[in-house]
Image 1: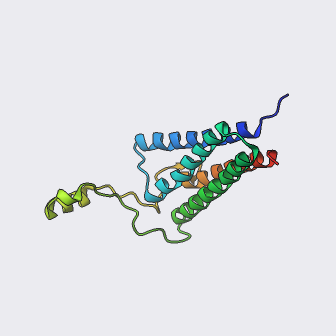
Image 2: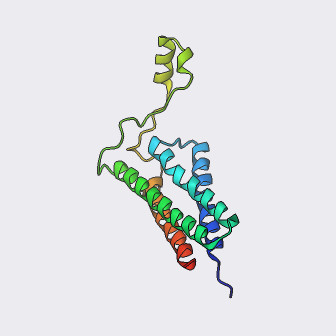
Image 3: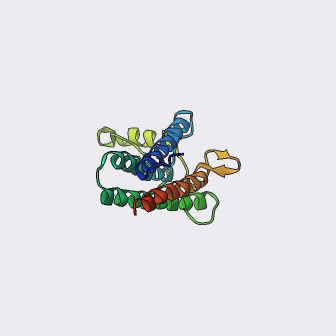
Length: 161
C-alpha cells in the first residue's frame, strides 16, 4: 500500500477547507445568513485552500514544509476564531457590538432613505446560532474541523523533515 505524500496531504487539507467553504455558502444560499464572526471564520479556510493548491505546484522541500506549517497556523487561528464565536453563542463572554448587517451606496441616499435602509437590513446576531447540528452550532463544528485540519497539515509538515 502506498502512503500519501506530504504534498497530497496538503492538497487534501486545502480541498477540505474548500469543501467547508462550499458547505457554508450552501447554508447561506439556503437561508442561513452569516454573522460577522461567521464571515471572519471563512478567511482562514480560503488561505488554507490557497496554501494547499500552491503546495501542490511549488517545487522544493523547504518551501513545502514552510507552507505546511503555515497551514497549521492558519487552521489553529481559525479554530481560535471559531472557539471565540462558539463562546459568544454559549454566552461565555460578550461578542462584538457590530454584529449587524451593512448598507452599501450610502453616499447617494438621503437621510430618510438611509434610515429606511438601516431599518430594513436584517440583523444577524453573533450570539444566536442560526442552526444547530447535533446540538452544536456551525461555529462549534468549525472548531472541531479546524483542529482536525491543523492535524492534517501537521502530518504533512512532519513528513517533510
